[in-house]
Length: 278
Image (cartoon, rainbow, N blue to C red; front, side):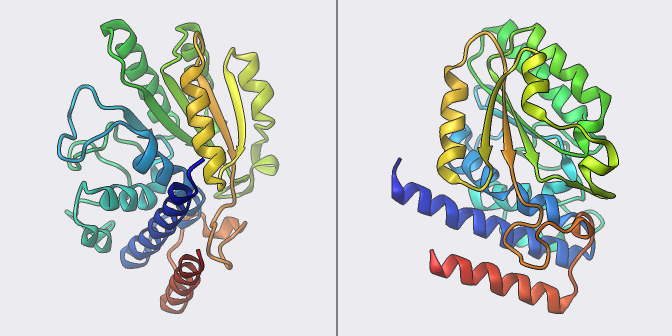
């Protein structure tokens, strides 16, 4: 593994976290916890894995990505802005009326969004359709989707899981952002859906379990997924909700609220300090 590449992706992931905090603070609402837990994975997707071109957002040969847990879009927007899809200043307009960066991804208003997301489970189902379309049309693009823990309590998620295995969608890679928390508390207390690996294997999926904050493990998982034939792959990424901001880490209360000015400044300082020490 190229150490320079790993270091660069760590820095990008930190910039994504800074962007997510900027967005939620300026929007005075949003979902920072799940955005921060997904930032390392999004850095690897947008700056290493996905075959995309911001100048050609509708290229039919591009890889697709669907953030099915759409409420975590502050991190997605930050990744896309850093990748060149739009001006990073747009993050300060997050959730403002008429802005590009709405509270959930909207494919009609933002170039580079492959599927609008909001109703949990639907994004993953749409991703399955994209992957099947590629198979039927003989296209070689790959489709990636990310779901969350609370989202995986939706029955539609498991219908999509069954669908993908039935149609042998080996061009589909699902990522589970397994931070263990949802809006009402710990997933295992609200409605336990774990263990993921045995459930997905029972549905006929290839399963890879990783540390979702370890850049090398993330990149290796994506490489392994591309070698698997005849079945879809799920990457179960163990993460920390609120990762990178001390007072947000592992706190369900930060699922869906914005920091005040003092908290915003502290979060920025912690992330900038971490980046400077890399």
